[in-house]
Image 1 (cartoon, rainbow, N blue to C red):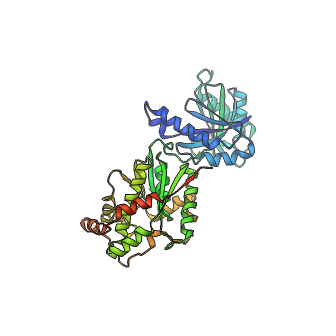
Image 2: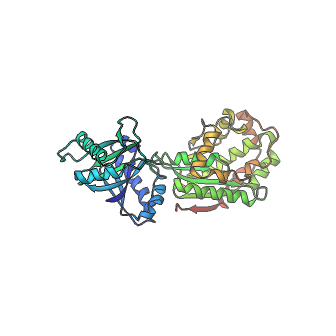
Image 3: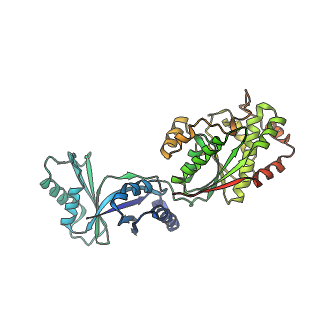
Amino acid sequence: MEKVILLRYGELFLKGRNRSSFESALIDSIKRALAPYECNFSRTQNRYYVENYRPEQERSLVDRLTKIFGLCSLSVAVKVASDYEQMYAAALSAVPEGSKTFCVRVKRADKRMNKNSMQIAMEAGGYILGRRQGLSVDLFTPDTTVNIDIRENGCAYVYSGKVECAGGMPLGTAGGGMLLLSGGFDSPVAGYRMARRGMKITAVHYHSYPHTGLQARQKVLDIAKTMTRYCGDIRLIVVSFTKIQEEIHRRCDGDFMITVMRRVMVRIAERLAVDNGCGALITGESLGQVASQTVAGITSTEDAVQQLPVFRPLIGMDKYEIMDTAAKIGTYDISKQPYEDCCTVFLPKNPVINPKLDKARAEEAKLVDLDAMIDEAIKEAEIIEYTAD
């Protein structure tokens, strides 16, 4: 009996005439993930299969496949001919030791079979009961559900259990977004959540060396690399924010330091987004989490964006939800390292919580050479390309 990995997609079922383009993007993602392995990828109607892989690579393959956006679940199955004796024997082997109850579910896509799904399920259940002591049938809450999926290709796939995958939509099907990436917990999770909706992520990071150390910069580089596990290839644009930040500190009201700084950051991010073919900005803002993330603060920041929408996928999440997701995607342990980024430089004692928009604009206007400083920062930006392993 040959082992295969059966892949299932989710939301793509809801797509209409353009479903083929989403499927093509998903298949491309799967093939990229499988590239380092010796295996074959095949498909039938509504089913994808990974076959002919080396047994010792099964765990690694499963782990890699679970991180592909667009796949909702997978199962390690046994592939046999659509022969009753072979299917029933495979069903028996799918019941693990220690199970007390089981049931059999059958999907019969191949209507050439002379028995219907109910008959096959009953016969398979009887076969198992006759050969395994101590088992009983439970159709509602069984310890093990044995699935027999009989396809039109003359094969049946027998398995018990499913592994949850990343879900969402295939990467690249929702265009590109420019993520404002810091070293904290929030922005990597924001990027992950938008990538899960099909958005290709490009990221910009602002550093203020020597006010912040090189460890803070490396921390963000490590985060970006880790994000590729789910988000695919990422271009990280590292922008020196030192001169601009010093100028804001020199000229602007200290209480508006964060407000003006964030306005300038989104201006730079929008320029970079347009240059890199991104259709939106992505931030890790969560309503009320810090002083700059009030309704007035968010309004003052977004006022500086001229062309693109700003996506805030964490806006209604609390810190615990965000940190749980950070742990899931592997960025938590990096983000908790005590290296602070440029947002902590020149922090006012009493940052304004509800900035008036006119006042925010007036404070930013004090930066008389702002356009030139932005041009210089973009020109001198460092571009780092991270490729998913």
